[in-house]
Image (cartoon, rainbow, N blue to C red):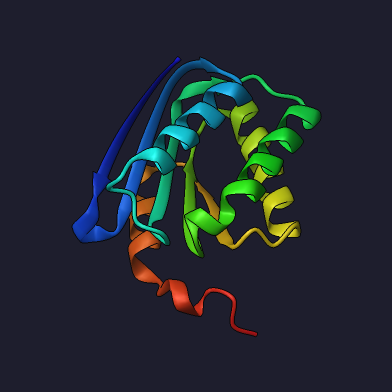
Amino acid sequence: MTATVSMDLSQHLVRIDFSGKLDVKDIIRSLKNLIENPDYQKGTSLLFDFSEAYIDADYYELDRLRNYISAICDFLGECKCAFVTHNNPSKVVIKLLSIMCEAYHLGFHAQIFEEQAAALKWLQAEDVNQLHQV
């Protein structure tokens, strides 16, 4: 498993590109490294690209990841999160995770994309402050 992190502070965007087989521990480790980075800014949009990755996780492991995200959501702030994957098994895992996070109101709005360009367009198009208006 490889995770490459890039930050574009001018675009208020963090991108993490994953490749290879990964599990929940790998994703948690990447999130931990992100929030420990002194350049990270609360509320920054997140793009997780799993196009070159295969996620090996069951429901209970995903719930553990959701619990970790819940524990750090105050640090992450209200933000948008784009998941990029065209790998069907990984897409199912990502969809389940995004549904779980939305159900627990963890402070971010998630969308799944097959192409990184579409994800970037979505991340840059909408004002984060308008995400949870009723």
